[in-house]
Length: 111
Image (tube, rainbow, N blue to C red; front, side, top):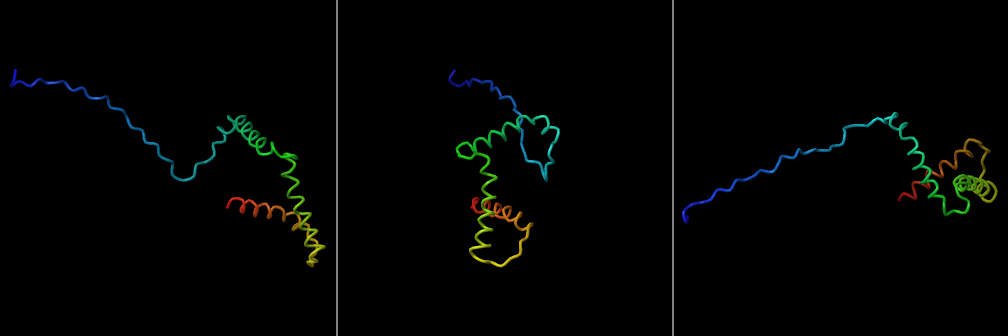
């Protein structure tokens, strides 16, 4: 027995297939059928985010409407009466000024 070597049967592990997950190339179109099928989920997630965002504010969702409106009034009063900047009344500029100010605010908050 001193010179004999016992042979051990080696059992190989089963081969497990490897799945590679890769992102698709290019733009992915929006699947409207899937979006329609999960519309209630989208509704409740959106409503939850809105409630969370405005839960601790005193005025709630109305603040999102009132803040740009008050900003427009303050800009009109400041530049029109106090600073005496000569300008003609332009309804289009008056309406779109809060939209531009909101874009600026979004940019500044993202920095």
